[in-house]
Length: 493
Ligand code: GAP
Image (cartoon, rainbow, N blue to C red; front, top):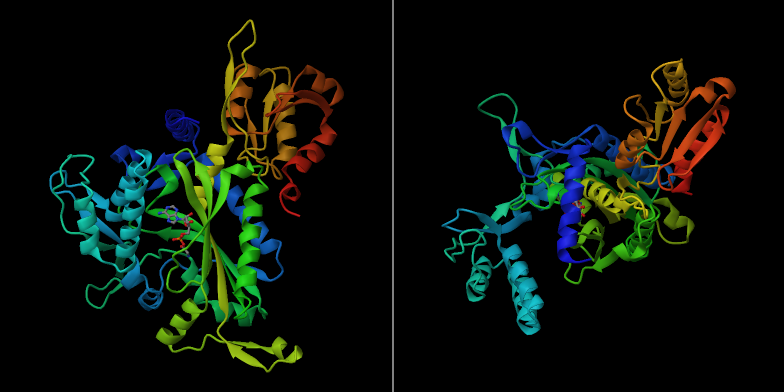
């Protein structure tokens, strides 16, 4: 698809998300808060369904994975031990004329992309290599030199009047405790993973977990991103769905391969075309990792990371053992049964980490369609969300054909029999065709119309979102027909 079409499609998705109550800018009446968003009435439902899909796949389907819900505030030493206080930085630079702030590496990435577009592949490769070296060595002066040597100007002022490059820590901090004196600086967690690491022994002992086992968690994370863009792609407050899988040292590569495959399968089960996904294996690894890959999705603005799978060795648990003075070791009885000596060891960890908001955006983009329904006689189209029925915010819309003759009462009776199991919407305003279109636009897989025949023979018309096909069915069969389509068994086996 051409770039403009992609831009347009992305803009349409953003305005659709607002118009139908999926996503709103936070504090919009005060002109918004940059890179912070609220989920509206349908967004909250869709988000919950994505969470449920993940939780069922990770926790319910695996006997050896359990879920927790740890606090956002953690002891400040956690972030010292994890390396976030000293190392969770982005290099930033300000333009003195526009007063705009940029990530230095992002400016260089944009320049590399421009070199490539102009066919200057040698220059692109050299700049990429120099930038990688500078980032790895945390050489801020070299980053500045590269910006100057490559003639990079501020996109707003057009000038090259830059400040020095400085490290900018991405963690938000606040004061803990009500006393002016003695209150402590704490951080809003920048990832949920550390809540899992510090509870490793609590869960292992209380749950009598045997290695290999996993701990999963869904929760908010906060990062003071230098630049936040592309709607809910890069936010300052977001949600992560993370799982740490604790394994024997030496078995980490086997489990890394397992989770790499399992996680892509989870994505593809939703029916996303396979070519929209790819792995991006990391060549340059963080100091604590011995393997890492991203699962990338082709957004309208290119392939971008949705999920990371990282083999983190015993780094985090060892760090917490050192900083807390508490043993983080596991006593492996099974080793003895296998004829090996009993062993105390710090487990290795494979992490799967997916951004819920990115998954939400991906889901909306994938589902959004402007379908041309024109015939020879008439121009027509409809906007629809082809969401998987399991993820659809509303499963069933219930329409009495008219507002009289006892039809609303019958419709309410049917709604009452379904609403505990399926999220339902009742609508009696406007012509049926218009009501169908409104449901198409929010992705409702089924619409039921209650008419005069319903009062005579207990049948209704069911209309399917994707095909627009309509069938006459008996009310007593409704539960099974809808239930089969929205069952999680369609996604998880
Ligand atoms: N515990 C590992 C970890 O946090 P990460 O690659 O920094 O790894 C994992 O983040 C996932 O969280 C990313 O793949 C992305 O989907 C999501 N994510 C990270 N920063 C984000 C942000 N500012 N806004 C939205 N999602 C974000």
